[in-house]
Length: 553
Image (cartoon, rainbow, N blue to C red; front, side, top):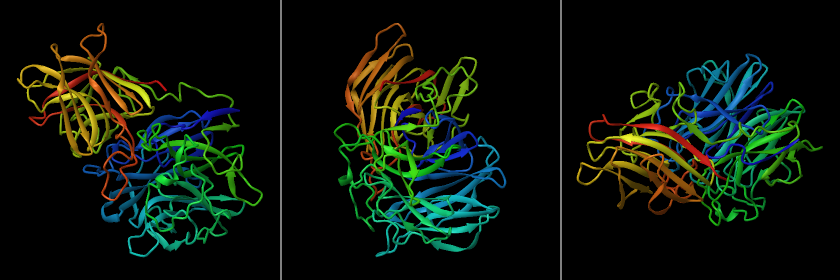
């Protein structure tokens, strides 16, 4: 038996969908405006998780111009025992303005979790958060039907239909299955399971904020209707006090913040059963900065242990519905701390750069980023400003701790004032911090300066700069609970020097950024990055010797 501490996947890892195939567990999570899309994590013991692949590589999807927090939402993993195929369903949210949530949903299949995956098969545009259920050669699609009419249930209801996974066409009609199902409202993320002759529906409710939870329904027919848990409360939440918000579209519900819990926003769950019959639910969660309701690490993945009651309902192992920070997992004896580590140390001396690197809005390709295998460096060509949602040259990794540093060494020789290269912290195109090499105002010397984006406003820290004479510099950003310090040195033997004052970057959080109008910021998370810009001839490049992230908490 082992005790593990949540989150099991720290940093941006929301909307987890878990699947067991034989002795292997897999989790897929949302990726929003980031590519590669839909990361897949693997574990043998439910405690130690390792990123192994992505489903949406550089093909399949166009995320250029994606506004926060749209993009790739809520992937769902399933396995068809009839064909021994993995299936993944997901939504591409394209518009959220005016509360018109326009999303196309797709499905892809593969013989191996590593792919190759089929081309996306279009399913529907009725809403978002699709899931697939396979039974006796038939396939069923459950999804939230988005509601935009005045006076109707917001944001909608869950519907289900049989579907042909060769053509993507429905077999029959949609069946509404959740009328009267929830009191917290904002029902979404449906997933169908079977147990003891009944069909069970897990669904998220309460919005993606502090009222988030997982609710459960039951039916003798897959087409419902599904009776709600008799308690009329979530089976899992971080805020167990009663809330009636039917029809309330608010995703924040800051009044539901639970001051007694280190875990907040527990919801959007996915169930798995071990070979020994133990039941666990993975779910998203958040951890605010102390004494705030700001969540820089976004929505992370946690796990809870459940059991079936004599009445045929799921409840947490302790009989409550409150998400726990620590969980006992009976099926394993020990954990592997090396597998569970989310530090990164890439010297660019391998055939491929680290799998954790992601890029906002655009694809990673050798037109702008490449490994110089002989010199053992990563070369990044400058493209658009980081304010752009089109072609920013950013290689980023998820922030996974409240205290850490990100470090690199850069060689760079600009010949135009728009050409820069450096290291930074990034949420989206409107919100970031960038310590960069650039030309001094005399357009001859090279200096180190800091540029910042705060809710779309440009803040150039022009009064703090350091001369860089040999065209290379070691750079480090130390992040400490929402504060950032920029450090540099010109050789490996020098001591680190501080550039300017400590900078408040707590706004680089889900609640601190400016997302779509009408939405509460975003729900992605903070990233660390190396990158370059060039608004001159697109020919300048920077060489990075290494990239290191060392977590300290």
